Length: 586
Image 1 (cartoon, one colour):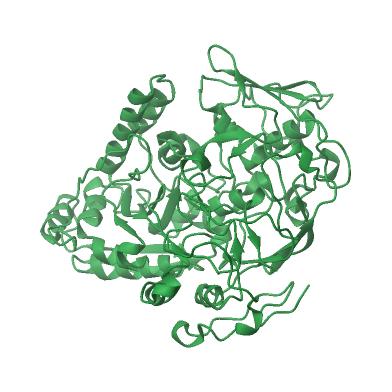
Image 2: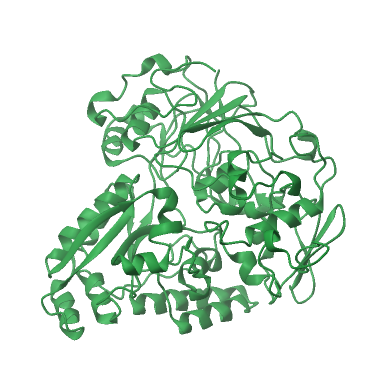
C-alpha cells in the first residue's frame, strides 16, 4: 500500500488541524487527473456522476468514530449496512442505483424476492448456486439460517435490530450458543429443506418481509468459523472483498476476494482493488482531506461540518463537487421519562416549547444541514404529514411563556436540572447539546453535558435503560434514518416499547406507551397501503403528544465528492453515497 500525506495504512489519521488553515495543505496525497463527467452541484442526486467501468486503485475512506461492529449480527448504522455489502451478501438488497430505483429491493444471495404464503406468515427464498465463502467453501441455506439464529442473541450482539426477534415464531429459542435441542438443529421457525432453500415462519403476518431479508443478519456465517463476540475481528467474506487487516479502533483494509464469482452477482461492480478505512479520525480533518483530495469518502455519510460547509458553499468550484438532498432521517433528542421530573408529560412538553429550533438547525449547519422538524416522520417517507404540536413562535426560537406554563403544571415552576448526552465523536451532536443547554436555560432547565463513545452509545449508555436512568440522562441527542423508506422502516424501532431490552443496544431510547404499541400493530396488519400510511401518521402524532421525542431537523447532508471519485450517486435506500458502486481514478 502507498504511503500518503498524513494517512498511513493500519494507523489512525492525524489529529485535526484547524479547518480554515489546513484545506489544501495535503496535496501530496491527491491523485493526478481532473476526473470525468460534468461537475455540478447535486450532480450525484438522482443520477450517476463521473460514470466509469475502470477497475483498480485504492478507495480511501475514514470514520470520525469507531465502527459499532463489523459483525453483521451486531451493527445498526446506515453507513455500516451500506458498507457491509462490500464483504457480505444478504438474501436481497437495495438496488445499487440512483434516485428512487435505489430504494427498490432486488435479489442478492437469493435468486428472487421472497415467495409468500397467502397470509404472509411463511416466506421462502431460493439461493443462487456457485456462491462461496472466502475459503472456497460453498454457501448453503444452513449458513444463512445460522447467521439469523446468532443475530437473535441480544446478550452477545446487543447492537443489531430486533426485527427477527419480534416477528419470527421463536417458541422460546434465544441463541445457537444455548440451543436447547439435543441434535442442535436450531430454530424451528427457519427451515432448510435443502442446501438452496430457506423458509421463514412468522408469528404474525407481515407483507414487507423482504425488507427483513435485506438486513445484514442474513449475510451467511459458517458455524465452524463463528467466534462469537470475536467474529468481528475477522468476518468471513461472501462479497467481492475480504479483510486483509483489522486493527480494532484504528483501521482495517479490504482486498479482493478471489472466491467471489461475478457471474453469481449482478449487483456489484467491485471497481477498486483495495479499500482502506481509518477509524476515530477528527471530523474536521476528514473534511479537510476530502477537499484536498487526500481522502475519497467520509463513510458516515452525514455531510461535512459547518466550517467546511461554509467554505464549500462559498466557492462555486468546490460547490460543483457537492451534493445535498433531503433524506429519510430525523436528527432528534430523546426525552427520558425514566428520569425525574421528566416522567411528567408537562415537564417534557416544557422542553419541547423552550427549544430554540433555529439553534438546533444551526448545530447541523443551518438550512443546508436540514429543515426544521416539527414532528418525527421525514417528509420523504410515503404518506408522511407535517404537523406542529409545539409551535416555537414566529421566529422558531421557542415559546418561553408556554414552556413556563408547562413547568408550573408539572410542579417545577423554577425549572430543574438534568444531564444531556451525545456521541463524543460527532461535533454536530456536541453543538446540539450546547444549543439546547443555552435555550433551555432561559426557563430554568439547566443541562449538564456528557459525551459517550459512539460505538457504545446505544449498547452501554443512552441505549441501556438502567444506565440512562441511574445516571440521570434526561435528554439524549440522537438521530434516526429509516431502515427502509416507509412508516414501519422509520418508526418501529424507535417508538415501539416492546423492542426495548434491559441488556442495552436499544434504538428506542424511552418511548413507552401501550397506545403507541397498539397503533404499530394496527399498521402492520393493515393491508391497504394508504390506510397503513395514515396509521403511521397517527403513531407520529401520539408520540409527539407524549413528548418523548424532541424533533430537531429533517436531515440534509452536504456530501463532498473529490474529483477522482467515480460512479458517485446518492442512494435513496441508504440516504448517502452508494458504496458498492464507487471507483477511483488511478
